[in-house]
Amino acid sequence: MKNTQFIRQWIMFLMITLLASMAFAKDNIGIVPANELPQEAQTTLVLIKHGGPFPYEKDGVVFGNYESRLPKQKRGYYHEYTVKTPRARNRGPRRIIAGGVPESSGEYYYTDDHYESFRRIKE
Image 1 (cartoon, helix red, strand yellow):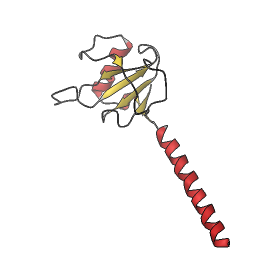
Image 2 (cartoon, rainbow, N blue to C red):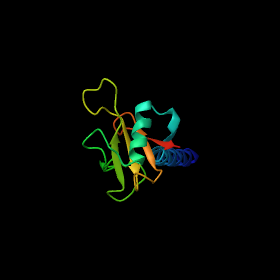
Image 3 (cartoon, rainbow, N blue to C red):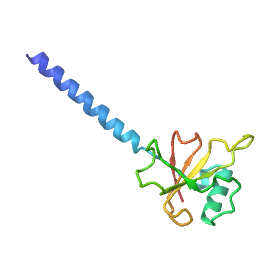
Image 4 (spheres, rainbow, N blue to C red):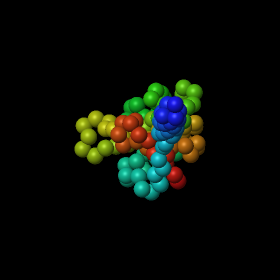
């Protein structure tokens, strides 16, 4: 009887731990100081704040946040901008995502792995 109770408690503990770690991981966005970004990302951030001009046609399009790696917002809240990747033949994997009004929101996220992970840019 005591063994059964211990096993139930242990399973409950494991389930709670697992759920807590999943919730934490979803909202676990790192931070990167703006001055520690690659120079190309710092340049893109300046362009965003000045409203352009942007070197890539898709810069400024709505970012869907389909994987919910950024805080949940209604569609159209986030916009994406390409960060030039040296030696890349296409747009490369690096982006800055801006929340709200891109020029003035102060809410910017950097990814260097094509949306797999994000770090909030701290200015």
